[in-house]
Length: 115
Image 1 (cartoon, rainbow, N blue to C red):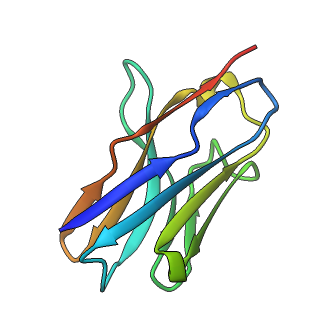
Image 2: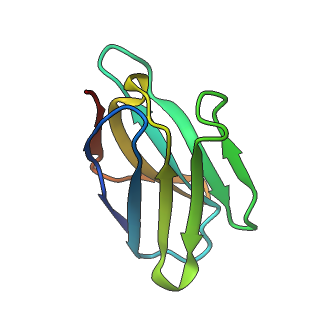
């Protein structure tokens, strides 16, 4: 089993920054990828950013140039640095880990961008 614990969400003004963290524990060998999804009320859950085992990254078009995903293998933690936040970035952000054919999810952390 894998456990994911997110932190770092909160309320921020437009143009501000936040950094989300996701710490993985448990059976975390042979991880394929880790990433962040987000889900806003009434909207489909979308993949925001992902980093593979080899370090390749993916970003949704809506966050390219503003968000950066990174990882610390020694701490089994993945980060999402979010800059120049916009009101449309408001959502619950969920950490995701893919191991083999299995996917694991964190409990989610709320990000609210509002003045």
